[in-house]
Length: 119
Image: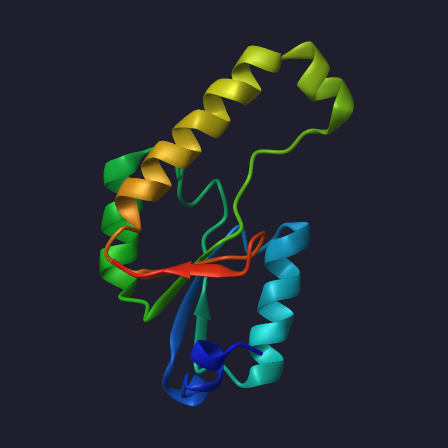
């Protein structure tokens, strides 16, 4: 556990996990639950389209999380990636642009690199 994570008062912390139902996101949710995180929030893709910048900003502002963890991705397997490569590339680019702008005022934990960025 990093020094910054050891200082977090988990019972008092509200965490938004983007991609909470995916492989990485669900593992993060389980880890947060084991740490005793106060509240964990997340929306399915049918509830919130993270490619829609305004909707993402509104949802995060309404939820008021203390921490945002970005584990969201568009997935579909090898066949879908091969059949619709441009759609997947466009979707990934839109995800990245919207998330970077929407979550910029929060402390952002990036699971792949384990780095944090402060606003």
